[in-house]
Image (cartoon, rainbow, N blue to C red):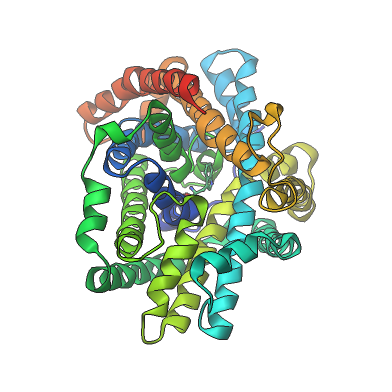
Length: 453
Ligand code: TRP
């Protein structure tokens, strides 16, 4: 069964880098990272998150890309193929299934939050921003299930469109233009915060670690977020790796992606926290609304704030768009391989399923706000899906990837994909993947889950 080429190969080496960066950079960086940092007391959380990126994220990402390229199919079938090649059991393809499930669960809440960004584009484009205090505007949005549903639906549809068009045509183009613009507008916002916010307090909050501020559950959140922000542990990066040309260097590419991703997150933090500390009534720990209540304050204080606000949220929406595509792609690729469905039909089924699940997330903010049953571990559906994926499925998926490539795959096969210039680099990577990353993930999972509220 050789299927390299059913789904297409990236147009060039850069397309993989762009698409994978497009997948990595998204709401995780601009929406989730700042509010999680805020909830977990700042610097210590940031430091642990950075350490997780380096010791776990980068080695596991290299492993996931190389599995994808060697398997050359959807994650489920790549796993089957790689397990056979290594002479390992058939059960390894369960990892692919777990990833497909995780992708659907993430897409469900991701699309709802991406919908909020669409609302803010319209808000700034039409009236120059919220007239009421920003917190009230956000509260009104959340209280309106029909509006949230409409926004969630629009975002699901535009994601489906790109997935259905196919990776090369649909994606390369989107990422190429969005990324530089996003970077640039974040820099402008940081500049604004520097001039008008309490920059010293913001930077101190982000970079001064106070270890008494962070709980053990917070450490698990930092680990989970390292996976989430790099799109690791569910097969998204594996699926993209499958479309990577044979000769492209994996290690360098992964380092570039991780560096860009981290920079975007830190810039978002540097844009948001100085405003939070300079504005009466804003708290770092205000939760998922942080981005949506803090930045409008900045836009209100700028000369062409309405226009810039609309542009900024449009860029965030595009970043979310190029990420959500990778949540859907593994399942679609599998349906196309297995049932020979057209991409359109497969996309309709997969996106439709995620959309249905997403309705529970829409309702989590209004009609079902008090629905926190024990079987959702006392959380709303929105919070539960976030917890289940970031703090359980992704770390578990990442752990299995590390174990597979580190212990099951033949080292010469891994080496053949990587072709590092120096043997020491390979040895360092393999040692980290075999011993350091798995032990850390297991430790943090155990300790964090015991303490999770
Ligand atoms: N990394 C994206 C973000 O930070 C979200 C994302 C896209 C993702 N694909 C993924 C997260 C796969 C986990 C797994 O917004």
